[in-house]
Length: 128
Image (cartoon, rainbow, N blue to C red; front, top):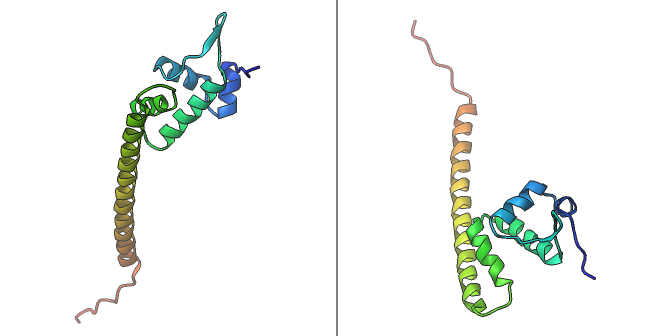
C-alpha cells in the first residue's frame, strides 16, 4: 500500500512550510489527491517536491522546473525534453562560472584596496 502524507507531514519531512506546498499546487506543479477537504500527498508528490526544491536551489525558474518535471513523466517527447534540459543545465553552469569569475575578480580588487589602506605610510617630512 502506498504511503500517504498530510500537508503538515510532508512539509516537515521536506523542511518546507505547508504554505510552500500550497504555493506549488497553485502553480500547477503538484496535484495532490483530496480526502474530503484535506490534501493527501503520495510518494510521487514527494518526489516531485524534491525535484522542485532541487531546481529552485540550483537557480531555475518555476517554468524551467515545470519543464524539468515533465521529463520524469512517462510519454512521448521525452528525448526532446532531455535535450532541452541538458542545454539549460549547460547554460546555468556557464552562468554560474561567469559569476564565480566576476566574484573572484571583485575579491582580488577588494583585497588590493585593503592592502593599500593597511600599508603603513612613511612619515611626511615637515619644512622648517
